[in-house]
Amino acid sequence: MATAVSNNGTAKQAATNGSGVNTAFRKHTLSLLVNNKPGVLIRIALVFARRAYNIDSLVVSPSKDPSFSVMNIVASGDEKVLDQILKQLNKLVDVLHASDRTGQDIIQRELALFKLHCEEDARSDVLQLAHAMNCEIVEVSEHVTILQMTGDTERLDSAHRVFEKYGVEEMIRTGKVLMARGQEITS
Image (cartoon, rainbow, N blue to C red):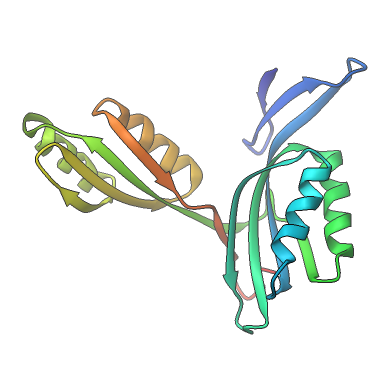
């Protein structure tokens, strides 16, 4: 499997299907407006599972109208399969609207908590770095420092690489939340 970068800077992984033809895999950001009732999430997950399409992250939140929810799904896979998934999602009774927001001008954020093994001799360096990276210091103890950071995926990935030299014991991330810019409604 090879990785290539497209004109808009999005990483794609190229693989070959059974017939030796290259297919492009990349992360897709989907936004759905759904009825807020039991069973909707499982029906949506089944659409992905039937197509062997993995969900990388999922965030569900209430909309302005409490009878609806907004789902943000990040999934990796073939674009042709994703087109079929979107068509199937839009046919589900409880899905009012499903769209691929990949490459659109939207605001995207994630939250990450980093637990660093941090002895006293390195603590001031870690705290100074955390301040420079606009991290919130959640906890400082004798051997552990916990930091909170929000930002886009690339920013959190970069922070993780920087903190690795201090010993990241654990990192927990939320899924991606997104919002359309300007007056456009996200879902």
